[in-house]
Amino acid sequence: MFALVWGTFATTLGWVVATDFRGAAHRFSAFSHAATPFGGSGATVMGVGFFRLVAGMFALVGPIVLVTGLLALWRGEAEAVSLPPVPAGFVAVEAVIVGVALWSTWRRSSFLRRQWEGGNGPRRAAVAGVTAAIVAFAALLALGSGTWMLVAWLLGGLCGITLLLSDPAGGPSDA
Image (cartoon, rainbow, N blue to C red; front, top):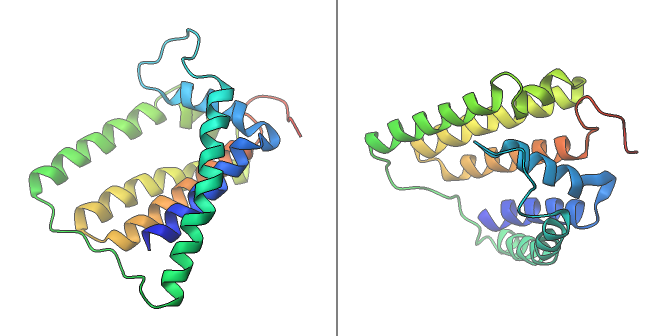
């Protein structure tokens, strides 16, 4: 199951960023810099070329992992992912980390807030999807439901790719 989810996400993100479809590599670089907590306004450490190179590796490996997962599913070898019981202390720390992460991305003039305020219906749906996926991922991890946790991760990632392909918040369209 993990191979299916990871292969789907890696293939999609890899090809979108590696080919710089609709300026995705440039937006990915800008998003990563904007989403970095405590990030300064200085020059980015990694440029667009680096992101495209890494995405190219994902674009090549992703389909192999996806086909491997599909073959395992076909043969009936794909199993549901189950996690061991999670201690209560871990759940509490996880909840604090998720809360701080959501607060930092939703506070005034931060990354998700800018995307929400500058967006139309599909962009707002993608922002809501990313936010819901973060909460669902953390909750499902705490509950030990690995298969649904992977589904939340994939849906959140696909919503993130939708944001990557949408027009920049408050800016003109590239397409």
